[in-house]
Length: 66
Image 1 (cartoon, one colour):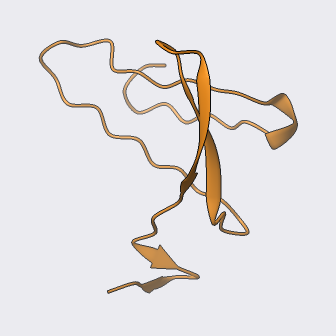
Image 2 (cartoon, helix red, strand yellow; image 1 turned 60 degrees about the vertical axis):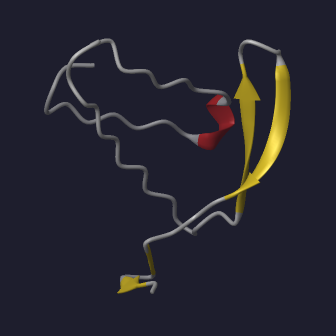
Image 3 (spheres, helix red, strand yellow; image 1 turned 135 degrees about the vertical axis):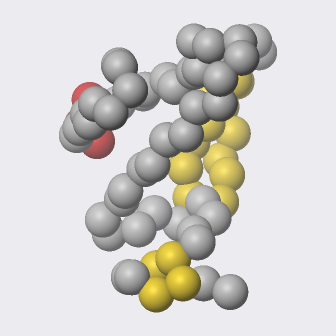
């Protein structure tokens, strides 16, 4: 993916991985889920284990969460 590009992935596709290819630049990603998820399964590549984590929102349904 290049700067400024947008991608879409349907949930049926499954696991996806994000990483910053730069050692000096900061990467920012924006994930939009509708309806909002309350939890997610994370996969730790170094241990090959999954863990369930709570999803944290800064806004819900367009209203900022304090």
